Image (cartoon, one colour):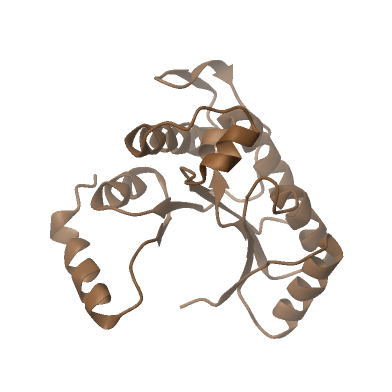
Length: 205
């Protein structure tokens, strides 16, 4: 079991202070969100946090994959892993707030289309962070001889956030951690979702 702290602060300085205190209190990881118009740059915030700490892991919960490019993000994550000495965790999701898509001029596709884009994104960035030179012909991305400088970690942990058994199947193939959402707030809610996510019902390689 690990204990993490998600940072929601008015300034980057406050985030650094909170992270250093979390490290002193024995927390395992600090995490930041990625909401256009509300949050500071998550990766720059984590770079500041990483420079001020020595042990605690730093991660995103979560970056909206539909507003990023896998090659450019892989480069940023590898750089952040260098800055932190190998403490980065990458959380990715499909986005759910129409206003954030509108603010960036990005079409707000259906949930199914956004999840498909997330799945392709995770597959590509996994390969890049694992040190591959990537040729890829997909629905969203066409890449030729794409590569990034290597991160410190042999395998940067990737978290996939969302809901549904299909998410678990995809995460089992390409990710390391699953962040489940929409599970409700009552004990019956928990029982219902526990039944949905039994290993026997999840299609994963």
